[in-house]
Length: 305
Image (tube, rainbow, N blue to C red; front, side):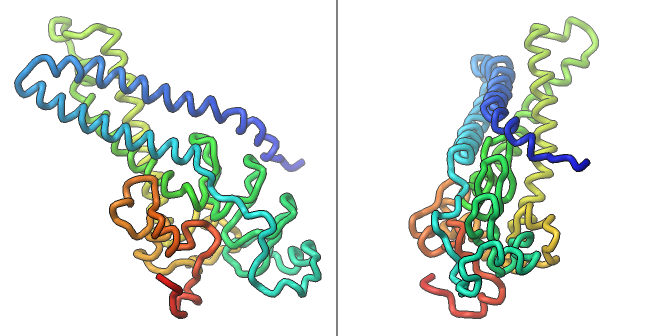
């Protein structure tokens, strides 16, 4: 008997608030170990120790603000749903309004989001734009869906993908800074001789656990970050990369520069913040998740760039 993995969708929804609290808990514990136990007290020592502590704390707090900004942007931003009553611009009158007939016309109409064949979602009972997928956890179709992430309690789609990438980016930088900063104190845990240990066992244990947590997160997030950088470079998503009917080359691959702009926009001042300018939203329809140019269309003159 086949296993229905979608029966766990309800459990994933309930897990949502717990995961947010878990993330905040890890950040809080790291803050305690780095700021209150190690580098905060060093500010009062004076000299080089105070200067190094000031630099570490300034960098840590800056990255922390950017991490939290990006994280909660992914959490609260709608990834993009199919507008009510959306219909493809193709001539769909041949289907005589029979969506089931359209969906059964070709396997690609159901399984391949990169095809230009009219696609219909049986669960939502509506047409699906190119690159959209139905999320069983959210219970709706998501524009340019990448995946459903339990860490952010949301789908990652067209309108919050940039925030998700920045969250990975700042998480990697933050955890790396923490791991490097705590490494000298971490070595004290393995020091022989009680006379060389000048901190309490509780502080030492907190430092040890924080170092292990942050080095583990840094390494794991680095792998995800590299994977998504490769996906952005090819203008594809995690789902499209593993889709059954996907060809080796994405039909939406317009070159690295254009692919990057379809995620981060053209205004360089906004590349590292989870925001878009109004001008970019107007001149880059792909940021909204509905209008994507393929390589075949790229040969045509671009409209109002």
